[in-house]
Every structure is written in C-alpha cells, then in structure tokens.
Image (cartoon, rainbow, N blue to C red; front, side, top):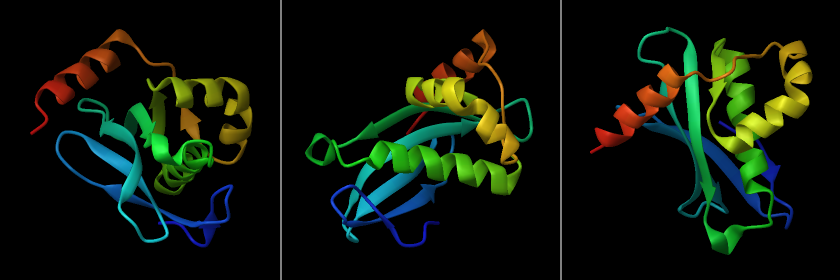
Length: 130
C-alpha cells in the first residue's frame, strides 16, 4: 500500500491492510520484518462506506519512530482513495482530526463524530473476534 516510506530512523516501512471479519487492520512493518503496529477498524455494519477506526498500537520496541503517525496518515489517505468516511473512535485519530480535520476534508476526506451506536458496534465486533 505504501511506496518508499521511512520512519524517523531512516528504516524502510510498509503499510498494508489485513481484511478480516469482523475486525480488520492497517498494519506496519519495518525493513520487511513482522508486523509491529496496527490500526484496527471495522467497516460500519449498518452504513455503507463508513469505517470505524477504534484502536492503534505500536510495539514498545519501536516507539518514538513515528510509526503510529505513518499508520494514521496511510489509513486516512486510503479512506480518501476509497471514498470512505472515517469514524474516529481511536483517540489518536480523534485528536488528529480535531486538529487537522479541515485539511483532511480539503484533500477529499470525510469524517464524522462517533455515536453510542458506533461504540456498540465496535464492542460487538471485538466480542465476536476469533
């Protein structure tokens, strides 16, 4: 999904997507290694074209390298390419869109504030994860 992206140390990183049911994730690897970070999401069960991003995590051994930011930027860029509205339940995505939402929308993105129904959908999906 990514082309020639590097982290703060200059290491090459790649972002991909793991599609699963019910919980999918944007994933990040460093230097062709194993997955070291994830931004988990569900596609909204009742509203076509909405993606609820609810949890982002990077392995502690890779903290401080900007990997969460790269995951966030790639997930948002992917949503623009696919015409998907982001529902930011994850605090990282929520803070970013609170600060930079106008820029995201100007670039062609769309997002909305999460509702209780969105939180319930995430809770249900996580409970039924294999």
